[in-house]
Length: 283
Image 1 (tube, rainbow, N blue to C red):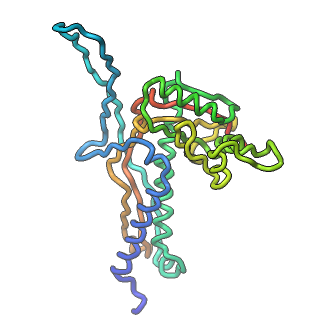
Image 2 (cartoon, rainbow, N blue to C red; image 1 turned 180 degrees about the vertical axis):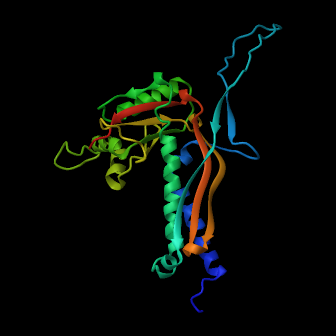
Image 3 (cartoon, one colour; image 1 turned 60 degrees about the horizontal axis):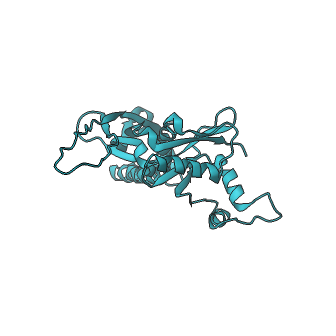
């Protein structure tokens, strides 16, 4: 009976799954660090995020009463729901694998849940105030568009930081322009930002905007994709329950069900704190 599966063996396996899933989720999610996270403590599955109006000060005369200014905030409601993924690991598959099965499954689960969170958040990038929209079908992403987005946010007194999230194929043209690739015999950068793109393939910061690439953004049938420039307070991510791993033994199948889940919700909190930028996403 030397090959019996013991409780300590299973414990080690599932600890590896949990640790790898949490690490991969935290490292893979692009959008989570860029938005405002609202934990849901206690009962309930919704959060009401207050949205305060802009108030103005005025000159007053000495010994004159100030007129009252009402501060009546509206609110954005974000409702959490459960997302999950499951696989069934047979005893034979676990015991005969040459790799660390627990770590592999944890990595896959972490990637899947991170992608789901990112996909739900990037789907909100076209829900900002329509009056702020920039670009259009077939429009290439350029530094000019980023400067326009920055000007719109500054005009609305939106404080820094600003984040820009675009599909990698949309960012391609911006990189090509900054490095003059295709415009001369050799690629030469026209700025330090262009040098960074040449060295590492990333733009970093331009026009005060930290630029990120996210392949979870959907490209529509006409090869266009919605990206955006926004402040973290524009989007909300409410977390009811962080990523967790659970197992259930199926003795008749000689296998174990492994389930990864997370409970969260997403929503636009301040639609004027973001600028949707529709650009071409064809190489």
